[in-house]
Image (tube, rainbow, N blue to C red):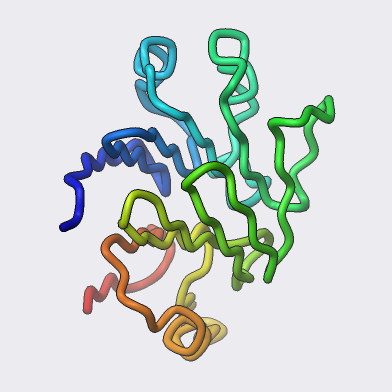
Length: 172
């Protein structure tokens, strides 16, 4: 049986996923989570797929003042002012286990990475800027072959961004 989860859309590509024991925050850019982070008694994991300001907001690093056990899972190219043991920089094809959280990191069609995460019997994929980009002026960057080939296991949650600059939004 799969444990229930609560999913909250934050902004742009940002999501909050709450399970029985864990709080996962993906690509925080803006939104109201500070109070939840301060009051949360669960394990907290903060993911940032790349350094663009709409996917990585340095304010997330301030959350560790209230929650010293918070864990950061960041793309290899994100620069932070201090190296701490709770900050994990990951490259594509790396794996990381923290408690019952298992992470496999994949490439992106932009800078940074995407994350396949398994926790409490739930498997989810956060794409960051991994996308099937289509610009009418240049055509598409086909990421679907990559996605279908690399992440064909059963996923319970898939998050991907929608860019207002693309001509059409097509949902499959």
